[in-house]
Image (cartoon, rainbow, N blue to C red):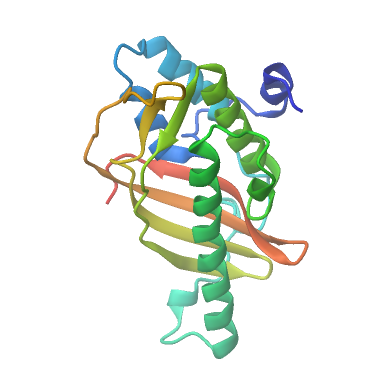
Length: 207
């Protein structure tokens, strides 16, 4: 079982928006009644992560976009469908783990890897430490914007306005809904026979 200090040691501290639970997590944390701004800032620092340099689908690379063609080939279409299925499964697994703040959930490893996995585990660990859980749906509207070998990039207009914080013991609501759709860019890699998310970046109100 990873300790919080071990998690912090493995999560790069950058200026990027959080990966893992991404914007819905940050939004839920910011909405907690009475939560100091310094706590929100600390969560952002803990969650920051960067894509490995030269990794498939990273901002520094130039994968060929599927949308650059008039129509994708059958193989590209099948790959894009598999990427989207993995992206949706990633969120299903994150939402399920957040509902109990289970930072040891084995399912998290099915569709997350590397820094993304460490970041998500760290955020769930922090929820458990604070006696909180996150519950509610996250509405996704993803599309594949590029494919290149074993890398893919997904863009999503995400609504996490109903993904809220609750007291883990009493079940009392600790947050309020903030209606907004944010643009999430997810970077995936084909790892050990499965598509997995290794980084996410979010732009507030980008949709």
